[in-house]
Image 1 (cartoon, rainbow, N blue to C red):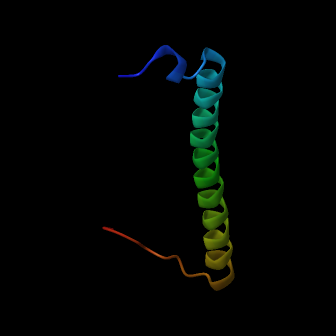
Image 2: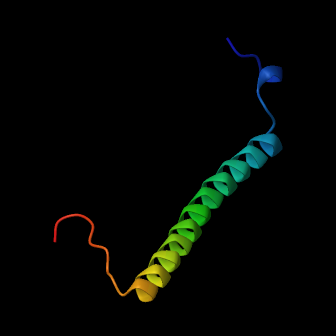
Length: 58
């Protein structure tokens, strides 16, 4: 069983919660930014070659 002195303090739990939320938000921002960069590079390539890539069912 966990004794009272083994439990983290409320301040430490709050910091841990903020850290988890910050990590999740950072992952979302990185994925969004990476996808935008990839899309911009693909768009530049399509404009240079004049050939549009078709992926998936078209």
